[in-house]
Amino acid sequence: MFLLNTTADYGLALDPRDEKTLDASAAVEVERHLAFRKDHGVTPLVALPGLASEIGVAAIHVKDEGHRLGLGSFKALGGAYAVIRLVLEQAEQRLGRVVDMAELHSPDIRAVAQAMTVACATDGNHGRSVAQGAQLVGARAAIFVHSGVSDERVAAIARLGAEMIRVQGTYDDSVREAARVAEANGWIIVSDTSWPGYERIPGLVMQGYTALVREALRQMPEPPTHVFIQSGVGGIAAAVAGHLAIALGESRPLFTVVDPARAACLFETARAGRPVTIAHGEPTVMAMLECYEPSLVAWRILSRAADAFMTVDEADATDVMKRLAHPISGDPAVVAGESGGVGLAGAMKAVADPAVRAALSIDGRSRIFVVNTEGATDPGKYQEIVGLSPAAVVAKNREGALT
Image (tube, rainbow, N blue to C red):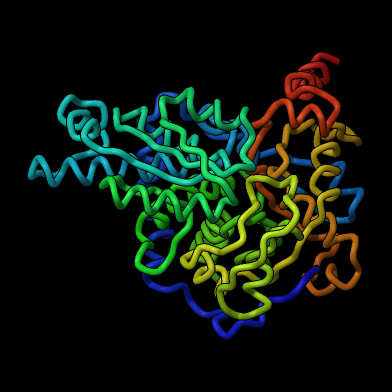
Protein backbone atom coordinates (compact mmCIF):
# COMPACT_ATOMS: atom_id res chain seq x y z
CA MET A 1 0.00 0.00 0.00
CA PHE A 2 1.16 3.53 -0.77
CA LEU A 3 -0.23 7.00 -0.18
CA LEU A 4 1.02 10.54 -0.49
CA ASN A 5 0.84 12.84 2.51
CA THR A 6 -2.38 14.82 2.17
CA THR A 7 -2.79 15.79 5.84
CA ALA A 8 -3.63 19.36 6.78
CA ASP A 9 -0.18 19.95 8.29
CA TYR A 10 1.81 18.68 5.30
CA GLY A 11 4.49 21.15 4.24
CA LEU A 12 4.20 23.35 7.31
CA ALA A 13 7.33 24.33 9.23
CA LEU A 14 8.18 22.07 12.14
CA ASP A 15 6.65 22.90 15.50
CA PRO A 16 9.18 25.14 17.36
CA ARG A 17 9.51 22.48 20.07
CA ASP A 18 10.49 19.85 17.52
CA GLU A 19 12.82 22.18 15.63
CA LYS A 20 14.67 22.88 18.88
CA THR A 21 14.94 19.15 19.55
CA LEU A 22 16.30 18.27 16.11
CA ASP A 23 18.24 21.33 14.97
CA ALA A 24 21.97 21.57 14.31
CA SER A 25 22.92 22.87 17.76
CA ALA A 26 21.18 19.95 19.45
CA ALA A 27 22.82 17.50 17.06
CA VAL A 28 26.24 18.97 17.82
CA GLU A 29 25.66 18.29 21.52
CA VAL A 30 24.76 14.69 20.72
CA GLU A 31 28.03 14.26 18.84
CA ARG A 32 29.90 15.89 21.72
CA HIS A 33 28.30 13.36 24.09
CA LEU A 34 29.46 10.53 21.83
CA ALA A 35 33.04 11.77 22.06
CA PHE A 36 33.00 10.69 25.72
CA ARG A 37 31.84 7.16 24.87
CA LYS A 38 34.85 4.85 24.68
CA ASP A 39 33.10 2.50 22.26
CA HIS A 40 32.05 5.25 19.86
CA GLY A 41 32.99 5.15 16.21
CA VAL A 42 31.34 6.61 13.12
CA THR A 43 29.29 3.88 11.45
CA PRO A 44 29.94 3.07 7.78
CA LEU A 45 27.98 4.42 4.83
CA VAL A 46 27.79 1.59 2.31
CA ALA A 47 27.37 2.32 -1.41
CA LEU A 48 25.47 -0.24 -3.50
CA PRO A 49 26.23 0.76 -7.10
CA GLY A 50 25.33 -2.66 -8.47
CA LEU A 51 21.85 -2.60 -6.98
CA ALA A 52 21.40 1.04 -8.01
CA SER A 53 22.20 0.17 -11.62
CA GLU A 54 19.87 -2.82 -11.54
CA ILE A 55 16.84 -0.83 -10.36
CA GLY A 56 17.61 2.21 -12.48
CA VAL A 57 18.71 4.91 -10.05
CA ALA A 58 21.95 6.86 -9.76
CA ALA A 59 22.98 5.78 -6.26
CA ILE A 60 21.93 3.85 -3.16
CA HIS A 61 23.63 4.54 0.14
CA VAL A 62 22.99 2.52 3.30
CA LYS A 63 23.95 3.90 6.71
CA ASP A 64 24.88 0.68 8.52
CA GLU A 65 23.86 1.02 12.16
CA GLY A 66 24.63 -2.64 12.81
CA HIS A 67 27.99 -1.37 14.08
CA ARG A 68 26.73 1.25 16.55
CA LEU A 69 28.25 1.38 20.04
CA GLY A 70 28.55 -2.38 20.40
CA LEU A 71 24.75 -2.84 20.49
CA GLY A 72 24.13 -3.50 16.80
CA SER A 73 21.32 -0.98 16.36
CA PHE A 74 20.64 2.72 15.82
CA LYS A 75 18.74 2.58 19.12
CA ALA A 76 22.13 2.71 20.86
CA LEU A 77 22.12 6.43 20.05
CA GLY A 78 18.79 7.23 21.71
CA GLY A 79 18.03 5.52 24.99
CA ALA A 80 21.54 5.71 26.43
CA TYR A 81 21.83 9.38 25.44
CA ALA A 82 18.53 10.19 27.15
CA VAL A 83 19.58 8.35 30.32
CA ILE A 84 22.88 10.24 30.45
CA ARG A 85 21.18 13.59 29.89
CA LEU A 86 18.69 12.86 32.67
CA VAL A 87 21.47 11.87 35.08
CA LEU A 88 23.41 15.07 34.35
CA GLU A 89 20.28 17.17 34.87
CA GLN A 90 19.56 15.44 38.17
CA ALA A 91 23.16 16.03 39.22
CA GLU A 92 22.84 19.73 38.48
CA GLN A 93 19.80 19.92 40.75
CA ARG A 94 21.46 17.96 43.54
CA LEU A 95 24.83 19.72 43.34
CA GLY A 96 23.46 23.21 42.66
CA ARG A 97 25.84 23.92 39.78
CA VAL A 98 26.31 23.39 36.07
CA VAL A 99 27.52 19.88 35.27
CA ASP A 100 29.41 19.18 32.06
CA MET A 101 29.40 15.97 30.03
CA ALA A 102 33.12 15.64 30.79
CA GLU A 103 32.21 14.90 34.44
CA LEU A 104 30.09 11.89 33.51
CA HIS A 105 32.31 9.34 35.24
CA SER A 106 33.17 11.44 38.30
CA PRO A 107 32.30 10.19 41.83
CA ASP A 108 29.80 13.03 42.33
CA ILE A 109 27.82 12.12 39.23
CA ARG A 110 27.98 8.40 39.93
CA ALA A 111 26.58 8.96 43.43
CA VAL A 112 23.59 10.74 41.92
CA ALA A 113 23.07 8.03 39.30
CA GLN A 114 23.16 5.23 41.86
CA ALA A 115 20.03 6.67 43.47
CA MET A 116 18.12 6.63 40.16
CA THR A 117 16.14 3.87 38.42
CA VAL A 118 15.25 4.18 34.76
CA ALA A 119 12.66 1.97 33.09
CA CYS A 120 11.26 1.34 29.65
CA ALA A 121 9.32 -1.08 27.50
CA THR A 122 11.08 -2.58 24.50
CA ASP A 123 10.96 -4.97 21.58
CA GLY A 124 14.68 -5.44 22.21
CA ASN A 125 16.93 -2.70 20.86
CA HIS A 126 15.69 0.34 22.81
CA GLY A 127 15.88 -1.62 26.04
CA ARG A 128 19.49 -2.56 25.35
CA SER A 129 20.33 1.10 24.87
CA VAL A 130 18.59 2.22 28.07
CA ALA A 131 20.28 -0.60 29.98
CA GLN A 132 23.66 0.31 28.53
CA GLY A 133 23.19 3.97 29.49
CA ALA A 134 22.28 2.98 33.04
CA GLN A 135 25.29 0.67 33.25
CA LEU A 136 27.61 3.45 32.03
CA VAL A 137 26.58 5.84 34.81
CA GLY A 138 25.81 3.35 37.57
CA ALA A 139 22.02 3.73 37.62
CA ARG A 140 19.54 0.86 37.95
CA ALA A 141 17.48 -0.22 34.91
CA ALA A 142 14.16 -2.08 34.82
CA ILE A 143 13.25 -3.25 31.33
CA PHE A 144 9.76 -4.48 30.41
CA VAL A 145 9.43 -6.92 27.50
CA HIS A 146 6.28 -8.36 25.99
CA SER A 147 5.63 -12.00 25.27
CA GLY A 148 6.82 -11.78 21.66
CA VAL A 149 10.39 -10.74 22.49
CA SER A 150 12.81 -13.60 21.90
CA ASP A 151 14.75 -15.14 24.79
CA GLU A 152 18.00 -14.26 23.01
CA ARG A 153 17.10 -10.56 22.93
CA VAL A 154 16.03 -10.66 26.60
CA ALA A 155 19.35 -12.28 27.56
CA ALA A 156 21.29 -9.61 25.65
CA ILE A 157 19.63 -6.88 27.73
CA ALA A 158 20.05 -8.78 30.98
CA ARG A 159 23.79 -9.05 30.35
CA LEU A 160 23.94 -5.27 30.73
CA GLY A 161 22.76 -5.61 34.34
CA ALA A 162 19.11 -4.71 33.86
CA GLU A 163 16.19 -6.22 35.75
CA MET A 164 13.96 -7.94 33.17
CA ILE A 165 10.18 -7.92 33.61
CA ARG A 166 8.00 -10.00 31.28
CA VAL A 167 4.55 -8.66 30.34
CA GLN A 168 1.82 -10.68 28.65
CA GLY A 169 0.51 -9.16 25.44
CA THR A 170 1.97 -6.78 22.88
CA TYR A 171 4.54 -4.00 22.89
CA ASP A 172 1.82 -1.47 23.65
CA ASP A 173 0.75 -3.53 26.66
CA SER A 174 4.33 -3.46 27.94
CA VAL A 175 4.46 0.32 27.48
CA ARG A 176 1.40 0.76 29.67
CA GLU A 177 2.66 -1.66 32.31
CA ALA A 178 6.07 0.01 32.44
CA ALA A 179 4.43 3.39 32.95
CA ARG A 180 2.18 2.03 35.72
CA VAL A 181 4.96 0.31 37.66
CA ALA A 182 7.37 3.22 37.22
CA GLU A 183 4.85 5.69 38.61
CA ALA A 184 4.16 3.46 41.59
CA ASN A 185 7.88 3.12 42.36
CA GLY A 186 9.12 6.59 41.52
CA TRP A 187 11.19 5.39 38.56
CA ILE A 188 11.92 7.48 35.46
CA ILE A 189 10.39 6.18 32.24
CA VAL A 190 12.78 6.53 29.29
CA SER A 191 10.45 5.69 26.42
CA ASP A 192 10.97 6.03 22.69
CA THR A 193 7.26 6.68 22.25
CA SER A 194 5.25 9.62 23.55
CA TRP A 195 1.72 10.22 24.78
CA PRO A 196 -0.21 13.23 26.11
CA GLY A 197 1.83 14.91 28.81
CA TYR A 198 4.94 12.81 28.10
CA GLU A 199 7.01 14.31 25.30
CA ARG A 200 10.36 15.62 26.50
CA ILE A 201 12.16 12.33 27.15
CA PRO A 202 11.06 10.74 23.85
CA GLY A 203 12.31 13.97 22.28
CA LEU A 204 15.73 13.38 23.85
CA VAL A 205 15.71 9.83 22.46
CA MET A 206 14.99 11.17 18.95
CA GLN A 207 17.61 13.87 19.43
CA GLY A 208 20.18 11.13 19.92
CA TYR A 209 19.35 9.71 16.49
CA THR A 210 20.39 12.93 14.74
CA ALA A 211 24.02 11.82 15.02
CA LEU A 212 23.58 9.20 12.31
CA VAL A 213 22.04 11.79 9.95
CA ARG A 214 24.90 14.26 10.44
CA GLU A 215 27.44 11.50 9.88
CA ALA A 216 25.68 10.35 6.71
CA LEU A 217 25.49 13.85 5.22
CA ARG A 218 29.23 14.22 5.72
CA GLN A 219 29.89 10.79 4.20
CA MET A 220 27.74 11.12 1.06
CA PRO A 221 29.28 12.72 -2.03
CA GLU A 222 25.94 14.51 -2.63
CA PRO A 223 22.81 14.82 -0.48
CA PRO A 224 20.10 12.26 -1.29
CA THR A 225 17.09 13.02 -3.44
CA HIS A 226 14.97 10.27 -1.83
CA VAL A 227 14.92 8.76 1.65
CA PHE A 228 13.05 5.65 2.80
CA ILE A 229 13.02 5.03 6.56
CA GLN A 230 11.22 2.26 8.41
CA SER A 231 8.89 3.04 11.27
CA GLY A 232 7.69 1.43 14.47
CA VAL A 233 6.21 4.18 16.64
CA GLY A 234 7.89 6.70 14.33
CA GLY A 235 10.91 7.91 16.30
CA ILE A 236 13.70 7.15 13.83
CA ALA A 237 11.63 8.26 10.83
CA ALA A 238 10.72 11.54 12.53
CA ALA A 239 14.29 12.22 13.64
CA VAL A 240 15.69 11.69 10.14
CA ALA A 241 12.90 13.56 8.35
CA GLY A 242 12.94 16.45 10.81
CA HIS A 243 16.71 16.89 10.85
CA LEU A 244 16.95 16.70 7.05
CA ALA A 245 14.19 19.29 6.71
CA ILE A 246 16.12 21.64 9.00
CA ALA A 247 19.57 20.93 7.54
CA LEU A 248 18.65 21.01 3.84
CA GLY A 249 15.62 23.30 3.77
CA GLU A 250 14.08 23.59 0.31
CA SER A 251 16.67 21.10 -1.00
CA ARG A 252 15.47 18.37 1.35
CA PRO A 253 14.88 14.94 -0.20
CA LEU A 254 11.50 13.33 -0.77
CA PHE A 255 10.84 11.33 2.38
CA THR A 256 8.85 8.08 2.57
CA VAL A 257 7.89 6.32 5.82
CA VAL A 258 7.88 2.51 5.53
CA ASP A 259 5.68 0.35 7.81
CA PRO A 260 5.23 -3.42 8.10
CA ALA A 261 1.84 -4.25 6.55
CA ARG A 262 0.96 -6.17 9.74
CA ALA A 263 1.75 -3.23 12.04
CA ALA A 264 1.11 -0.17 9.91
CA CYS A 265 0.24 2.37 12.60
CA LEU A 266 1.92 5.30 10.83
CA PHE A 267 0.39 4.41 7.46
CA GLU A 268 -3.10 4.20 8.97
CA THR A 269 -2.51 7.39 10.94
CA ALA A 270 -1.57 9.16 7.72
CA ARG A 271 -4.64 7.75 5.98
CA ALA A 272 -6.89 8.97 8.81
CA GLY A 273 -5.10 12.30 9.14
CA ARG A 274 -4.85 11.87 12.91
CA PRO A 275 -3.17 9.44 15.34
CA VAL A 276 -4.96 6.10 15.39
CA THR A 277 -4.42 2.82 17.22
CA ILE A 278 -4.71 -0.19 14.94
CA ALA A 279 -5.94 -3.65 15.82
CA HIS A 280 -3.48 -6.35 16.83
CA GLY A 281 -3.20 -9.04 14.20
CA GLU A 282 -0.76 -11.71 13.16
CA PRO A 283 2.80 -10.98 14.40
CA THR A 284 5.31 -9.64 11.90
CA VAL A 285 8.83 -10.91 11.32
CA MET A 286 9.83 -7.23 11.57
CA ALA A 287 9.71 -7.52 15.34
CA MET A 288 11.42 -4.22 16.16
CA LEU A 289 8.69 -2.42 14.17
CA GLU A 290 5.69 -4.25 15.60
CA CYS A 291 3.90 -1.26 17.10
CA TYR A 292 0.19 -0.49 16.91
CA GLU A 293 0.07 3.10 18.12
CA PRO A 294 2.26 5.99 16.90
CA SER A 295 4.30 8.33 19.04
CA LEU A 296 2.48 11.66 19.18
CA VAL A 297 5.70 13.68 18.86
CA ALA A 298 6.84 11.57 15.92
CA TRP A 299 3.51 12.03 14.16
CA ARG A 300 3.60 15.79 14.74
CA ILE A 301 6.90 15.86 12.84
CA LEU A 302 6.03 13.35 10.13
CA SER A 303 2.68 14.95 9.35
CA ARG A 304 4.70 17.98 8.24
CA ALA A 305 7.98 16.54 6.96
CA ALA A 306 7.09 13.18 5.37
CA ASP A 307 5.98 13.15 1.74
CA ALA A 308 4.59 9.63 1.55
CA PHE A 309 3.75 6.50 3.52
CA MET A 310 3.90 2.88 2.39
CA THR A 311 3.88 -0.69 3.66
CA VAL A 312 5.99 -3.75 2.94
CA ASP A 313 5.07 -7.39 3.38
CA GLU A 314 6.82 -10.17 5.27
CA ALA A 315 8.55 -11.52 2.18
CA ASP A 316 9.82 -8.04 1.28
CA ALA A 317 11.64 -7.85 4.62
CA THR A 318 13.23 -11.30 4.47
CA ASP A 319 14.07 -11.00 0.77
CA VAL A 320 16.04 -7.81 1.36
CA MET A 321 17.95 -9.47 4.22
CA LYS A 322 19.00 -12.21 1.79
CA ARG A 323 19.74 -9.71 -0.95
CA LEU A 324 22.07 -7.72 1.30
CA ALA A 325 23.76 -10.89 2.54
CA HIS A 326 24.17 -12.30 -0.99
CA PRO A 327 24.85 -9.19 -3.11
CA ILE A 328 25.52 -9.19 -6.83
CA SER A 329 27.44 -6.90 -9.17
CA GLY A 330 30.32 -6.45 -6.76
CA ASP A 331 28.34 -4.73 -4.00
CA PRO A 332 29.55 -5.38 -0.44
CA ALA A 333 27.57 -7.72 1.81
CA VAL A 334 25.59 -6.10 4.65
CA VAL A 335 24.24 -7.85 7.75
CA ALA A 336 20.70 -6.55 8.23
CA GLY A 337 18.31 -7.91 10.86
CA GLU A 338 14.63 -8.57 10.31
CA SER A 339 13.78 -4.87 10.72
CA GLY A 340 17.09 -3.48 9.52
CA GLY A 341 16.59 -3.52 5.76
CA VAL A 342 12.94 -2.47 5.70
CA GLY A 343 13.69 1.02 4.35
CA LEU A 344 15.59 -0.53 1.44
CA ALA A 345 12.77 -3.03 0.91
CA GLY A 346 10.39 -0.07 0.64
CA ALA A 347 12.65 1.70 -1.85
CA MET A 348 12.91 -1.38 -4.05
CA LYS A 349 9.15 -1.93 -3.92
CA ALA A 350 8.51 1.71 -4.79
CA VAL A 351 10.89 1.67 -7.75
CA ALA A 352 9.34 -1.53 -9.10
CA ASP A 353 5.83 -0.02 -9.15
CA PRO A 354 5.45 2.43 -12.08
CA ALA A 355 2.71 4.41 -10.36
CA VAL A 356 4.67 4.82 -7.11
CA ARG A 357 7.88 5.54 -8.99
CA ALA A 358 6.11 8.35 -10.86
CA ALA A 359 4.41 9.69 -7.72
CA LEU A 360 7.82 10.00 -6.04
CA SER A 361 9.57 11.32 -9.18
CA ILE A 362 12.19 8.57 -9.07
CA ASP A 363 14.34 8.35 -12.19
CA GLY A 364 17.86 7.56 -13.32
CA ARG A 365 19.25 10.59 -11.50
CA SER A 366 17.76 9.70 -8.11
CA ARG A 367 20.05 9.18 -5.13
CA ILE A 368 18.41 6.96 -2.49
CA PHE A 369 19.38 6.95 1.18
CA VAL A 370 18.28 4.27 3.66
CA VAL A 371 19.33 3.17 7.14
CA ASN A 372 20.13 -0.39 8.14
CA THR A 373 18.65 0.12 11.59
CA GLU A 374 19.89 -3.15 13.05
CA GLY A 375 22.36 -5.92 12.43
CA ALA A 376 21.76 -9.49 13.54
CA THR A 377 20.47 -8.69 17.02
CA ASP A 378 19.07 -12.24 17.14
CA PRO A 379 21.83 -14.25 15.38
CA GLY A 380 19.87 -17.50 15.45
CA LYS A 381 16.86 -15.94 13.75
CA TYR A 382 19.15 -14.25 11.25
CA GLN A 383 20.81 -17.51 10.22
CA GLU A 384 17.43 -19.22 9.98
CA ILE A 385 16.25 -16.59 7.47
CA VAL A 386 19.42 -15.88 5.50
CA GLY A 387 21.02 -19.32 5.54
CA LEU A 388 24.37 -17.98 6.75
CA SER A 389 25.64 -16.83 10.12
CA PRO A 390 26.35 -13.11 10.52
CA ALA A 391 30.07 -13.93 10.72
CA ALA A 392 29.91 -15.80 7.41
CA VAL A 393 28.30 -12.80 5.72
CA VAL A 394 30.94 -10.44 7.11
CA ALA A 395 33.64 -12.85 5.90
CA LYS A 396 32.44 -12.35 2.31
CA ASN A 397 33.74 -8.79 2.39
CA ARG A 398 37.10 -9.87 3.79
CA GLU A 399 37.40 -12.52 1.09
CA GLY A 400 36.54 -9.97 -1.58
CA ALA A 401 39.27 -7.67 -0.32
CA LEU A 402 41.84 -10.47 -0.70
CA THR A 403 40.95 -11.42 -4.28
